[in-house]
Amino acid sequence: MARFLDQCTTTEVRAVLVAEKLKTLVGGLQFVSKAGKEISIECYTDTLVLRALNDSHSASAEITFTRLFFTEYTLPPDLRRCELSTMDPSLPLVKCTTLASTLLGIFKSTKNVISVDIALELEGHPSNDDHFDANVIVFQLHCDRMITKTHRIRLTESQTMRPVFNKASSPSRIKLRPFHLATLLQHIYGTDEVCMSCSPTQVKFESYFTNPLDVKNHVHTETAVDNSEFISCTIQDFVDHNNGCDSEVIQLIFCLKEIKALLAFCVASALPELNLYFSRGGRYRTCATID
Image 1 (cartoon, one colour):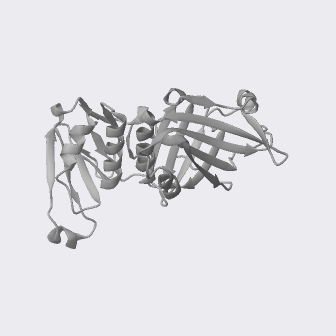
Image 2: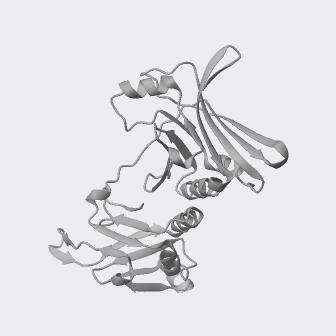
Image 3: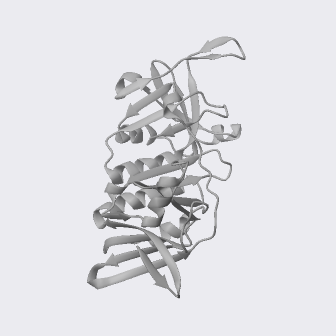
């Protein structure tokens, strides 16, 4: 869609969703915001991606919405022509970055919202040399009694960093229901981090404290479950090359609030299953991800 504003051509990517899908979108924003202070919105031909990366670049969160999630998802013809000539289809056609608190503030109250229009505006005509950074992102919340709330956010050029994690290279995988994971974590409190220890026979979740003094001052809780309780579970043994011996336990430490935010998103989206892909912790190229 193209329009003229003050003699300057503005091209926009437009997405529309109804109230029934709004809860899922807000849940996705809340989940991604736990990983970083800024949220990147990336538009591709058939998908819209929300992405965040923490300050230390040690954790990230990403959610992808297909065009079928939206009632309407349109790209300008100029962007489609540029896409056909681009050499790297993995790069977004349009992207922008803004504070997570700004986006969450827009959707703080959605009780009377009927539909939401999202537009990423680009000034001028895009070319193959452009980075396709949106100048403005507009949120229009259409509410009851013909009330429309419009939020215009002026954006600056940003550089999006995307971590690369290949699920196919992850030797260990666990498939389980979100409710099951929430039950395993509900008794762990008084700590910001959780240690997950995986062996060929069982998986154990326990409180994790970086300061040894905190162990004495707080309740230490651990929950163990047999691997047969999961929908599927594959724990790949590995060899400790430093000590020259086999190890049967894989330990991963993750932030509790990020997992709880993910579980809240699963509830909002009515997702039946979670897939955990991970490898050995404590190394640069390995990490844990939940898809």
